[in-house]
Length: 546
Image (tube, rainbow, N blue to C red; front, side):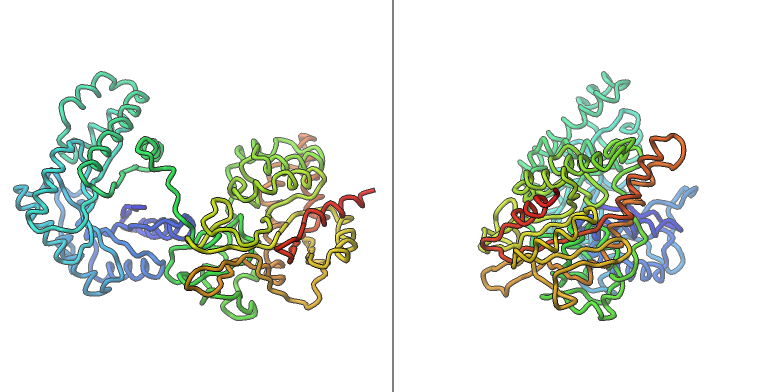
């Protein structure tokens, strides 16, 4: 993910967006850095911040002139050329950063000849650049000729073409004029026939983008860089036309790993945040260390942040979106039960506790979970029992090929207080079942006998590796998660309604308040991953309703 340099007082936005891309989107960020008004001291500061944030890739640019200036000028104790910036990064940081530089298939606007421009590009590569991303172009043949000249000049690193989908005629003319881009006559003439119809221009831009990319790939080009200008839909449609958007890579762990360097050895997390990964990442962003191999002692100073009350909220949509998802009014508890059931069957795409639609493995449990929710067990997390399935399985696999994965059946849900005693009563009849129940005040009911307990609920066996156990139920961490889980009833749902007038809003507000104030949050683990039946336990509990 390429993030342009904001510069000046807004430069922090570039760093924060790049860090967020790696922390919360699991995308490698390529952060821009320019020479414009940047003395060496400032360059050092920003590179140190980037390194601390786990950013590993920089695109080094000379940059544009300062706002209002007619020509670009070197600042005091700064760099005159991008090659100088590349050289400085290599001298100061060795090979920590992957460095990209810009290439100009139609020559930089300040260059005197294409040969001189290629000569300068080679200087940037020799200074330490790893790859080249080009300026936008629409003449594929001209680009390929330029690539050939670069290879003849001794530039052997990857050259990635810059593709800019045409969004509308006016912006296209402005951008190509500014960059002095050579646009083939047939493209210009086609665009002129539809210049007043943005929808047709955009559709043509997608068609042209697909054709350009196909020609580039057929010629041996092995990478594509899209200039989205924050308009991603055309890019997605181009990727769809190329057949790339359905590609799926194997996941190393059953949860998405952060790209931040400090977390590179992290391989264990509590299961409670499985559907709110961004929240967990934010809560633990400043830990001194991360669990590796086993979930460590949560009394350690490194783990202290997890026990703090979580105040920042990752909202699942705007107010209007949430009202559409969960109802403009909520007239009863049964209404809430149906909303949860509809999430399980796919009619609703998210809940406050679940940022995305149900996972593929949940389809195995769909029928049971739907029934639970309709009867008032409001499920927010689950996983099926798995006993030695292939690590390549589409639904439950992780960790790469050749391995076998295992899971204990797990359920997590809110329910009314009268069910908690029944859970405890029935648990005596199911020796493999452990449960823990907490209300928002922290009142606890459990059949764990040894106080704080850590139980592996997911593990895998792979060739040439020790057993990996990436997901656990930690009874102490559950207390911390409980605070967040109950807070979401208020911060994302109850807040949609105002007590008072209209009366429907007042009733809705009270329904959500009743759940927050009286319900318990329950987690259930069936330790028999071979023959256990966690839903037989739930059905036995529900049979005591009368």
